Length: 198
Image (cartoon, rainbow, N blue to C red; front, side, top):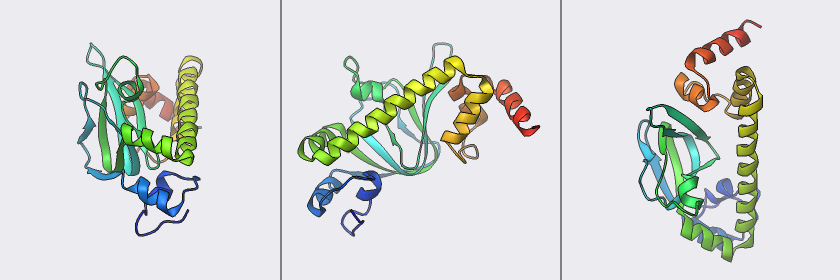
């Protein structure tokens, strides 16, 4: 499906998905374009979560703060990725956000309510297939990250991080990366020096 003046973003959002022109127009009407500037929050804990967000440009960070005040980065989301508080959105027992979603680079995103998205999945099989593929990929990625945190060294985790998020380091702070990797900023510095000296 090629972009048109009516639905220019739909082929980008639903990559490798075949939709008719009428379907694309219908889908496009369910999305809302949102601009967020660096430092703003898309979501904070305790807020009701109703939407999914596709990132056209920019970078966001999902993180939680423990009782000791320490930040734990759960996800970075860059161009072409989706983001929300998935515990609140998909969980069976919670309806409010448990995490922060912070804009760390000016971002353009397209949001759609879960209700509208669920209805699109019911009405358009290709959207349902796309959603299943996305969920499968996300599930595999989260399992891979858990396994890496349990079995890989800090250096190996860092190398995997920069492969997954190329060119992201110029936009994020060192403690963001360290908290994502589950290490201290001092350990991150040592890893970088070790790599640079090879």
